Length: 137
Image 1 (cartoon, rainbow, N blue to C red):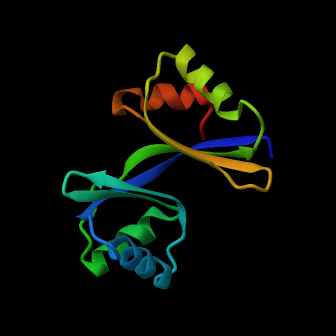
Image 2: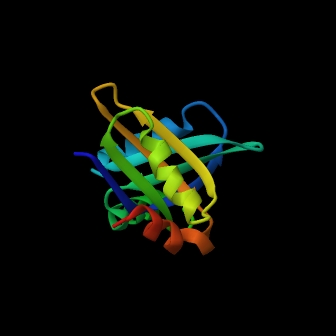
């Protein structure tokens, strides 16, 4: 598999920063058959921001609406999946740097089975330039 980079959609959800809130949301998505490509969460003041990257954005939006979950408009994020190797993200970031694209945020992880994945955000004005720089589909 070398490497695949694609532009996908993420949805920001602001929730109380309390134990169990994320578990309830994830359980609801699971019960509705909504598969996530990635998920990220972090504290934001007195709340928590959860970023959902669904495989099927329309299914995610329907499920969120039915559950009464307030979601922000879908926005672009980049998903990287590939064979884990030394410097895998360095190669991608070098392309972005050469295109003068600043990364807003990044989450990356190794699967432990020879694969890695990452999501990264760029400013809206730089999304198209970032996509061209990394060959995102």
